[in-house]
Amino acid sequence: MRLLADSAKVTGAKKACLVGINYRNTRAELRGCINDVNNMQKVLVEQYGFKVEDILMINEDQDKSKWPYKKVILGGMEWLYKGAKPGDLLVFHYSGHGSQFQADKKTMPSDVICPLECVGDEPWPGSVIMDTEIHQKLYDPLPLGCKSVCLFDCCHSATVANLGETMVVKEGPLTAAAKDALVKRCQAQKDAVQTQVRFYQEVNQGKLDLKKHSQDELVKLFEKHSFPKKTGSGDDGSGYSYLLNQKIVAFCTESVQKVEALLAEKEEDLKHAQSLKVGDGAKIYIGNLEQDLEDDYEKHQKKKTLTSREIRIRYLPQPKMEEPSREVKPLTAGLKGPLKTEKYKDHQLWVFSGCQDDQTSADAHVEGIYQGAFTWALLKALKEDSWKESYRNLLIQLKANLEMGRYRQVPALSTTHELYLDYGFCGKMKSDGCVIEGITA
Image 1 (cartoon, rainbow, N blue to C red):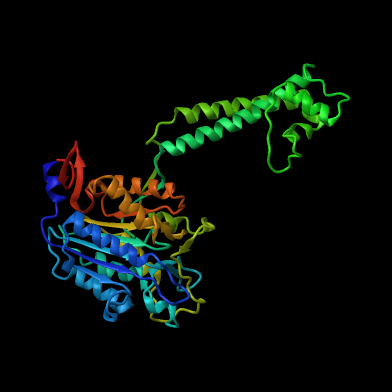
Image 2 (spheres, helix red, strand yellow):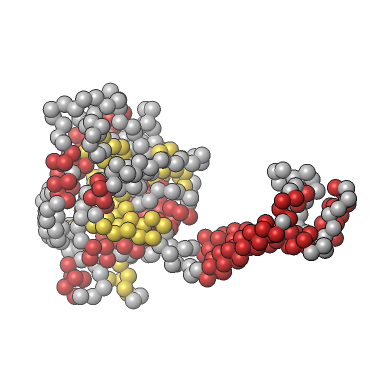
């Protein structure tokens, strides 16, 4: 394992290109993207040994020559890789709008990121950066032995990498708060059914005589038998509307047996919830996500769900589709080619995506400032692990943080070899209480 640990170390230069676009004073304005890259710059300098002069900031707070237009972003990518050599560490971070582009309705959509000019009248795809271009600028030039970490906090970004191995944490590990909430919910459901069973049983056994009683007398009878009161919508103020509204058919033998069976199910659900262990239960996919999505493209057209909280969506819709021009390459030539070759084998490349291809990334107000939910969750996970964590564990904790914040987006991490999931983020992770560069020796 010593050879693997050595190969995971960062021994050379460290450079970063951080792009944040708020699209100020446009119909597509966001609020947290520049904060994202400012926060990332601070972390890279203070925790991972980057120098400020080796970090290129591209955003609307810079001199206008560094505003995030397409030409400037592509130039930043070229600057990042210029002179790259084995042992170096390169970081690219994009926070802004993401979208998808279809050359025509017969092809699978291509992931794109949205420079500043694409919110105006500039036509697509010329004003956006296609995932094929991202490949050409960020993945193709990567020398063997040089490490590159790319982060895309934008919508529809899961397959922006199109690499051979993608890890998706569909559900984060069970937290103490989540278990407590689950147990309480199961207990409440069981108690409700148990009350219903007792009511039916006592009526059928003659213990609770409902004949020839006024409603006031029935309420007093229920109180005498200590039935719980339930207030809320539909209640008449007595707390017993749920019992007073029972129909005669509910008291027949078959109905009683049905509700008794339901009670048994609820008791089992409660036992199962109580038996769950905090930290268990993460649902993880590892595979060729791009290929799987292509195979299932016709079958899966999922609906997008938005929340009513103070959240803006980092998604910019494609303008009205027109007939493709001759300059538009068929997607089969751009996206799928790299997937079917050994092109990126042994290249140490990690690409984080803020959400799945059919999802949106949130631009939200978190912990007192506007920022991307994905970037916030990532930096929070790193901080909680003392800035030393493997890529695999980092993604799991990142997803748990998103769930804690009630964000539904599902992040992804693509790389070229499953082994690289166990390398340390930016070359640092913990092992048996000791901090090492790379992975466990």
